Length: 232
Image (cartoon, rainbow, N blue to C red; front, side):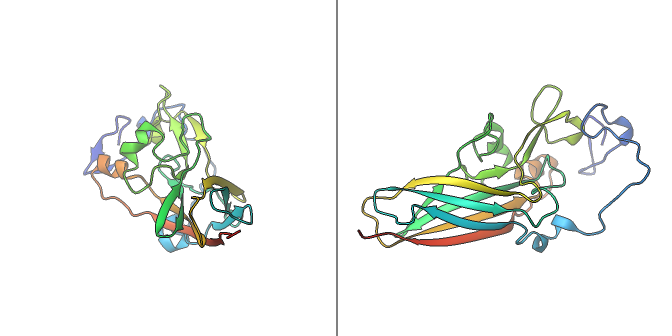
């Protein structure tokens, strides 16, 4: 594919002789080229359990009508690289947290921590067309954002001149996401918390643009906790 983004036989073809200079992929002279000799994240079962999840809650004694806090600990200390990694302009992961009690379910939505809301699904206007419906709005996104010379986000690495956002889980990192929820006044019994971390090689919007098939998301990790509600 030339710098204009032409497709040949429905697939992108790269011509290194016409790549734009001064971008994030400007070629460098190297004495030796290193490459992976293993399939990596293209084999789904190699992603299972890469990150460990653990659910925390406080206060320890929950009472009806009072606020509770849910903490999700993401442990990436066993990985030797960030998650997601590889083609970071396309890769993304997300954390979906659900709370269930008495046949009712609530999604615990993440609060934006980035200026452009790039870390919350559905908060950025471009994401609505790009990410489709698989990722529930309010889920915490883990990804990097690249921009072109006009400062616009791009999924074409050959156009990218800067990385303006990156909240991926770093190698060896442990991170906690915190959520707040007020228990209904008439609740009793127990509360069940489900946390699920999923990974996607590229979003559905990319497949639509290229006319190729979409890919299924991969379950990376999940955790569950049942919390008793005090009657007193």
